[in-house]
Length: 442
Image (cartoon, rainbow, N blue to C red; front, side):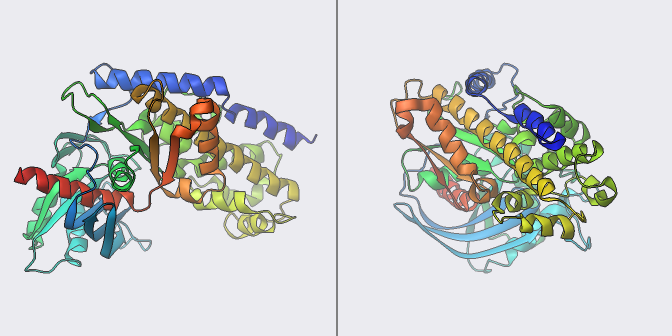
């Protein structure tokens, strides 16, 4: 065995999550849920959504605003009931452009500038003589005191816009709508994207009681059967990306130390699309430094943080050509690594494989923790609705989650299913708005 393969085997073993570790993580996750629910210190925020599952009878036309990262989307959505809906129009735009003519997520941008930009996107879909109830999917840790009132606790995903942390998000949006002469747009609900994903899937599948995002970021919500503050079922946004009782490697520690907020979002930094590319990069750089890959002089681009993203990782995993020619082209064109050997290219693929496999198994472990909290004897059926490019597009990712669940649940594994829920945050916002409008009438 070559020195490179020996080293890779050693690193891969550090990223391997055993069945015993899966069970320990699930148990620790459940304990953190209980702590968070009852006000004890916990890395899980357990934030109330003030929503339960939809009845499936929600109808009407609503605007859905989806702000979950570096892009903003607006959907004009009509709900017909019985799980039927149609998106009549949509608008979307990045919050910063590549030419850097504007950047509304930097520390130099203000809350007013950010929300004015968002209101301008809403304006493209509305007519002046029609009233539009609006639901807002805001995918950041938010302290909600009601269905339409939420305060940003802190930014994640490297966003730094000033004047938003600690502010009422709905108030910021309403003020921006008025500045853009959009008094006919009425914000009615603010939700997290995990809550939206759960709502969207539950609209068509009554067994859905967990909603998760496995994409650029990671988080999960679930239907709490008996929250201590209401005793009525309510969807809880856990902000699970902050969970930290995990088996960290040296590479995880390096990534965390160099991140915007060291010590925070530890699970997200091990599993999400925004970070798995960075983990692959850090591991590859260490192999360059050890002289086990192509000459270091040809890998200067690879020293750039976050040069690799989730799409790049999928490319590495998808290449089944005999000489890994697609990986060769990627290394040459994107990373400027010339003269790679077949062994080098296989190494990049192996690194991508064990990093993404660990990601899927860790996510599955948290799902197990939620299920054993909701239904210790697994007496009911449960569907886990998942949205995000990592789950949808990364080869083997969904299969690894399902296999991990099946292995741990044994002969009751058929009672737990997962499903891809596209546009969950957008459709879910429309459903939340329908529920909010109905509650106001009652």
